[in-house]
Length: 79
Image (tube, rainbow, N blue to C red; front, side, top):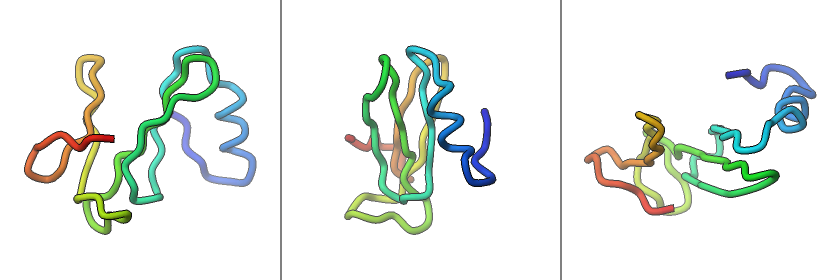
């Protein structure tokens, strides 16, 4: 998908989402899942190196239409 590289890119992405689109975004180092907009969902995978907020090191899988956040042992992280 599109990347945020310059000022205004995030606003352009958010204003062009279609109903039901999923937004994957990182950088906060805190895993998250939040509903917004017109049946949209925001996911943040967390961090495999420097997690924050007491969360374990984690990553996200998008496989066969399923989205899962897991820690480095493979256990699912509850969001």
